[in-house]
Image (tube, rainbow, N blue to C red; front, side):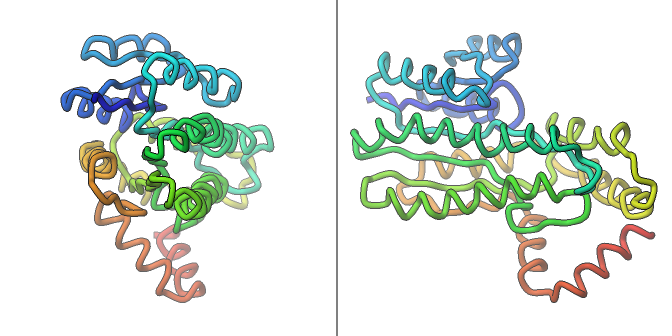
Length: 271
């Protein structure tokens, strides 16, 4: 029996590479993305392209319902669509905060809500949620973005317990800095969205050291390999940190006293 997957953010970055790997293994893969031109190209390697903006809950449900009607099952949901805007808590507008939650939290909610009835019915399935190292670590410039990833980590932990006895596995994938199209969007507000000069020192430092991490980071393959493992392992883990920086920052954040951590971050900003 062919396994069936639905992947959001399937036309670029992690989602695109996972789509390719699953197709190579013989999976039926529905690649969903709001970029209609980019997602149409996934037909070239046998995926089923779905033009979809996950912030539209009704269309998200309709897309997953159509998949289930045609395929008769859904084995894997990858709630991967997301984006980040890096800015101070005050400088990010209310509209921008609502937008980032609409995609990263409520978009994932719409997918999960649409997939679960079929997975409960078939007593099997997997849900992968792309979070981030900032599901654990929140630093200057990352406040609202980190809040969305903290939220999805909390949801994943609760859901994993709720569906465990129904044959459904839930895992989070935790990327760190990685060369995809994400960084170009995420750093945009640091150039065009600054409005409060009192934050100049800390935000210039943030732009310098985090931008540096993105420039030296590897491509998406390490993250995608973790996603593939979570999708195919007999007993998938709850959380998959994707690289050394994720593991290191998690240890630092949970072990180092907050006063020391705050001081270190401000020291980095002023270098």
